Length: 260
Image (cartoon, rainbow, N blue to C red; front, side, top):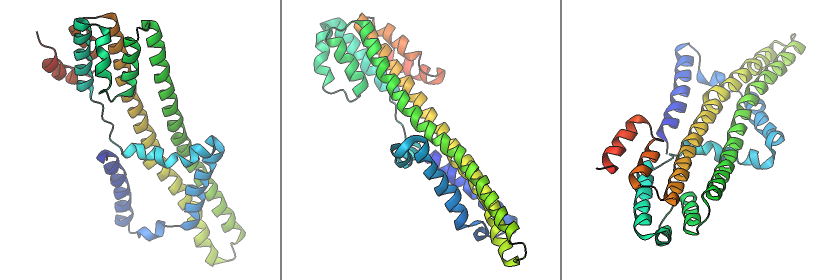
């Protein structure tokens, strides 16, 4: 569980709740079922029009990705590729075949399988980059759907505001109807803004960051696989892979795995 997502959501909601309470209002004042129907469910069903049934039904699993910790063992990947590079230079590329069975990363495993099979370097690069491009495309589709919900929620909030104002203006003589209609008019805008700014926009940004981190790892793996295919010295391979890391991580990893 990614605790930072929980901290962010709980912190935002907590500060809003605290602001409401310290402002002299009760939390129940801001609970309005018609506003929930218009903003939350209305904007959700609009996703069916945007992306189809699959996109809408898969939205909650997409949002769930923001609560999962993405573990990218950069150190382990570099170490493994260096080990394979050393074995390939010592025993030949065919010797890597026995190493592939224990390799859990399917993307790197496919690339190394192509190396063992004697595939041309340009073909390997094309195939691996094509697969990476497809992964990025799937990620972009999910991020786009979250961004669309962030756009739709405030729009439905404004629509709810108009609905509330119309109901209020049509019943000006009925003072008992003014309060409920005004509540719908204002709270729908509040709900739409909260959905977009507290949940959807930050979640889309988090998913984009996760996509960037995974892309970097896979680009590093492509470089490592091609370096092994080319017969590069393991130290040269390490230098290539370390260039993908941030300066702080690079120094710590280099001190451990790159030795004279």
